[in-house]
Length: 243
Length: 140
Image 1 (cartoon, each protein chain N blue to C red):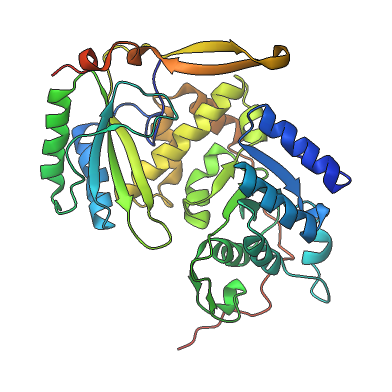
Image 2: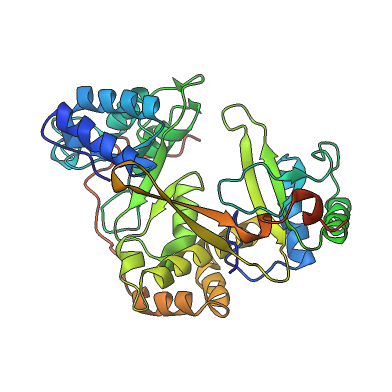
């Protein structure tokens, strides 16, 4: 449940209601501001709910080269604030995202030690000691047919949120969810077996679809859907070979 | 109904050859394996019975598969899973867990409704397979 509201009192009221009806997770939007996010992080910790942060509005100040704040910095602040989830890009979905820049965000959220890597936008070593990580969320225009790319680019400690990629399934939401889960499990199985799952991704999915009609249908429906546009959100440093 | 917990539960049941490859992957990552079983597959039941201790020192996938076979012989009607634990600082959690045995028929879950204050209805589920007394639940 998104508990975002016009003031803290209304937000607390909505959060209490979410807890009362048994919700395990509440959502806030980045637009509520850092003080409010900190307060909701404290509330969630105290009340045993997971705090999911939607980065709504970030692009108004993260995608300018001349002013603003990089999303990498926002990711860092959010880890310090103590949110549990944050939307951090999909690379292959409908939201633009350069793979290296997105890797920089994911590292900032998940790793204990992040070495300097200007190509990913990491300009100095970052030591996080025991500070817990944040689970990145990939959401927006992703579907079962991209599973090999998602696993390769984003790793496995990630929330893959298929919205339209679940609800848009011609046989209904349950079939959509099954298709996504089967695609994911087939890909993890293949990777663990040592197969070159990135190159063989489409083949692995096709094999899995033989015993799963909902996946066959999903692959057929979304096979031509991709979003390939140039990202404005790129690292300032250009990767050059060091030797 | 087919219980879908852990990974690979939406795929057709894994063959022994496939299970061995997953065990090998865990060993390659330095994740010790343990085997657990239960007749109460409630999704919030994280306390399954241990089938012996975690195999911290066993690095041979074939030997671990032998333990899997032994667990299946002893508890053919139980849910049995293989877990792999990542002890690395900062992770310290189950890294891989999948069901490798299930009862021939899976009876599923019963929905229970409770009247609470102010006409609030509270719902919970209970596994039919957990209804029988614990002493008679296991088939040894």
